[in-house]
Amino acid sequence: MMTIEMRRRDAAEPAGEDASVPPRKGHASLRAGRGTPPHAGKDALPRTIGDFPLPDAVRREHDDAEWNAAVPAAGPAASSPPQKANHAQLLARAQPSAQEGPMSQAKISVSNFDFYYGTAKVLHGINLDIPDRKVTALIGPSGCGKSTFIRSINRMNDIIPDARASGTITIDGQDVYGGNADVVELRRRVGMVFQKSNPFPKSIYDNVAYGLRIGGMRNKRQLDEVIERSLTRAALWHEVKDRLHASALALSGGQQQRLCIARALAVDPEVVLMDEPASALDPIATSKIEELIYDLKENYTIVIVTHNMQQAARVSDRTAFFMLGRVIEYAETNEIFMNPKEKMTEDYVTGRFG
Image 1 (tube, rainbow, N blue to C red):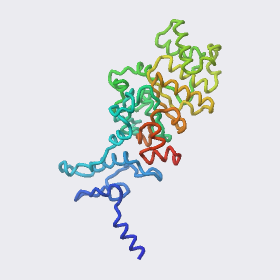
Image 2: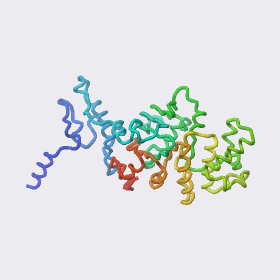
Image 3: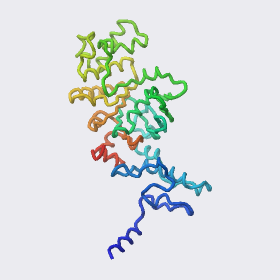
């Protein structure tokens, strides 16, 4: 009797959230089961990641593509997918647009951006508006596309064979991947600080002056002024002002990282990209880097990649959560950590996975 009752109950329950949409007559149902649809090939999107269901934004976007692939063209009524919010609409609800007011004017705008290494697609339809003179943190597990995305902003990925991009990234309305884009000028406007400090085997002075000299600055007085200003902005001047001509390699790890930040600031960029700048530093050096980031946002737009949830919460104004090459959620940092809209975001920031 219990078995019969359970079967009756299973038959009465809907198959899931999408069960309210009946299959088209004469066509295989795409909604009935939780597994892979009949037509799906090797690139089918998994329905779960470990024990966690894919967020609605990703799943619905993929389901619409499945519907269009499975239902033959028979007029608008037969081929139209269910009227549900797509990925872009869900992201628009999760992040205030420029028209809604809470976010300041976007410095960097990313629209439908995809990236490929050969035939492998690693970024899928990225849509972000990064505000001017704010700190935007990119979080997510290793391999989710954060570093690939941040390197795409100043085209650092161009040197990788078979790498290609589609979609648009604009800085102040200028297309980074446009035919008339000057990559050298782009990299002057968009500085980069890497995970591992990489000072040149030169003096502290020559490290900071390197980009200035490449740009044609030769006047000793001008060089001195810019180097002092850059080291001061990087909170390093008072520690090295008496040994500017000593080797940069003699500095501590935290000092070397701040020297690299000073070198990036010397050419007067508008945007500073930081790829896990404090991951290899001790807590004291990390706190100095975080204080520096907080001070720098008065003059620069900063995008930082970090695996440290506490660091993202401390230094950033907005946070984007990446997973499997997609932006799952993007909003004010307080909202991401205190009231996320997606369960996967909540599970990640609370340490349940990743």
